[in-house]
Length: 183
Ligand code: GRF
Image (cartoon, rainbow, N blue to C red; front, top):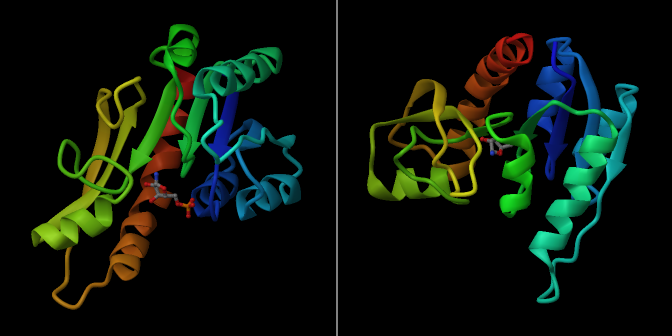
């Protein structure tokens, strides 16, 4: 079984679902102080903040190497992004190609990017959903591993719809990760 790390930036509800699903998470890292950090710590998982600048001086390549080297030092073999909001430069994919998973709150290739739920609502689609995919340097373009549709209701707001999509992600993502770390 591959040694699994989870990277988080936000509320960590997907990380919480992975903990509840008893995934063998060896390491959690966040790029900022966030609730995900608390969830990892409270679950007795080794959890670090690998902090970054959010200013114009942010050096993506240097940060990528810092995170990659930390993961390598921990012996990590598979990485699950769970609302991790920093994109990596090529150095990460040279080392972990085909070994980084993400879940995105739309049916890719529709609505890539940081505002997938808002964009789907603005477009007026009746169905959206989530996509579990491999992460590549090109954002939201890696191989699709699983998808599940979610119906858009006429009175949906962005947050209400996103929460319904996350309900689906919290069930589907741990299952896909379990398969990948066993492969
Ligand atoms: C999920 O909707 C996922 O698709 C996106 O970030 C969200 C993370 O949710 N990449 P949470 O922070 O774990 O609640």
